Image 1 (tube, one colour):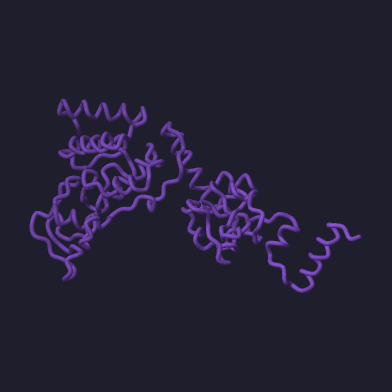
Image 2 (cartoon, helix red, strand yellow):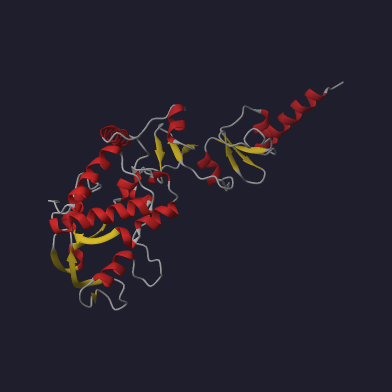
Length: 306
C-alpha cells in the first residue's frame, strides 16, 4: 500500500518531469529562500514580520529580483539600505544607491554591516571626519548630513518663482528685471548685502544664505526632524539672507562662535537673528558654543563688538 509520503514524492517527480508545478510548490519542498513573494504579490525578505508566516510563495534571491518580477513592497516598507552583490552597503546618500539593482535589503547601515556588508570607501572617510568633528565639538555623532534631505528653494505658491527668486524680488531696492518673459527668474535689481556692506546689481553674484546653516542644524538635533519640518526650515524667510557668494562659502556651516560677518556694523544684528531662529526651532547650542555666544551678546550690549 502506497503511503502518504510516497504519494507526495511521486507528485513532486511528476511536477519536475512535466514542469507543471509553479515555483511556490517547489519552494516549499526545498530550503527557505532569501525573499518570498506571497500569493498577493508582496515581496518579504527575512526582515519582514510576515516572512515566516508566508507559506505559499515564489522564491527569489533578492528583493530587487522579486520587484522586477512584478512584486511589490509591503505597505509602508521603503528600501533604506541596499547591500550590493559585492557586499557594499549603500544608503540613500550613496551615489550608487539608485544604480544598485541586485541587492539584499536592510533597514539600517548597522544591520547591513552586521550581516557581513561593508561601507563604500568614501563613506568611511566621511564618517571618520564627522565623528572627529563631533568629538571636537563635544557632542554626539549624528547621521551624515545630506543636503537633499532638506528640500529648498521651493515654489510654495506655485507661481513659478522659487524661494530664492521670491526673496530677490522682495528685497531689491529697485524694480527687478527678469531673464524670461514668464518672470520666473530674476536677472538684475539692486541688493544691499549686510554681510559685506556692499551693493550688488546682478542676481548671480548673490547666494541665498541660511543664517542658521542646514548642516549646523542637522548636527544640533535637526537630523531627526521630519522631511516636512526640514523643508519648512530650509525655506523660512526668517532664516534667509542674500549675500555675496564668496562670503556664503566662507561661512559654510559655522555658527557665530566661529564666524561673523566682516561688516562689523551688522554683527550684533546677525547674532540676534541667528539666536532668534535657534529659539524658533528649538535648536540648542552646545556648552562651548553657548559660552562664546554669551560673551558676544555681552559685548553687543556694551557696544564692544568688533
